[in-house]
Image (cartoon, rainbow, N blue to C red; front, side, top):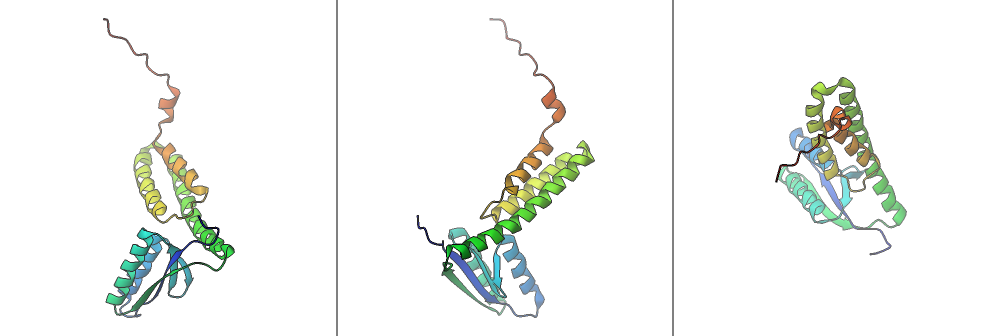
Length: 169
């Protein structure tokens, strides 16, 4: 393993302003992938086969919409620059996990009536966040635990286990 910065895949793109639908679709997909915005029309993800393929799809979509797109593989010039990128990405995911924590607390406070549906919805949201979580913050485990507690029945945990009767031999 190298002591230097890791490789990143960068997408430089320009989508025509009109019609706005392709531009909005591209931005939504980039947001779903969890890119870090370096500047207008320049985004980055840590390089691996999946992230490179994701940005290749977006580049193709941009050119099909009449725009221009170029993919780059690059390394930040220093570890501190890479750390800044990773810290920014982790902070964005932490905010998303905090929102899940807040929703789990609301569901818990509302009582058991909607707990199961809230747990299903929040598990799906956790899955979406984790797909773009390249530098997991501490809030990730906190959110997982909060969603898990929604599905636990505290009354069942307090009851002693039923004794198991053995069958006569």
